[in-house]
Length: 108
Image (cartoon, rainbow, N blue to C red; front, side, top):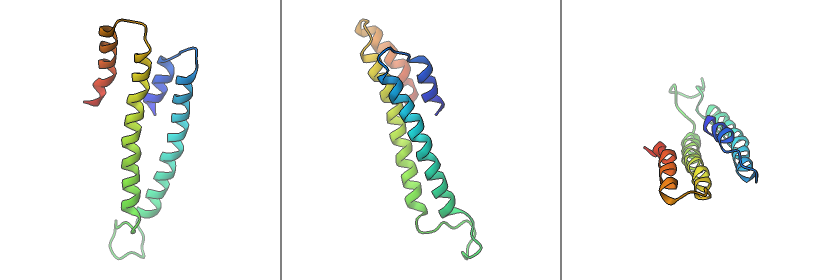
């Protein structure tokens, strides 16, 4: 979430599409993470009726897989936003490559 707020501060462009994508991503991901955290707590919380402690219900693995899928798609979304902006820069291709490398360093 902090990266989206950083992008909103850094990428101020007049057309507003980038700001829309960043704001929609912020609110959408906030709601999605909140729902997944509530589901995770509901399915994996300790329950005195379950024989073993710290045992998740049958739906626990599906929630974990959903959280992993959201995390992977969030990473792709965060890498896509600056790449579209760098592609529209009016500079030579070497400068674009250097700026893209700065943003893609986060892949490591």
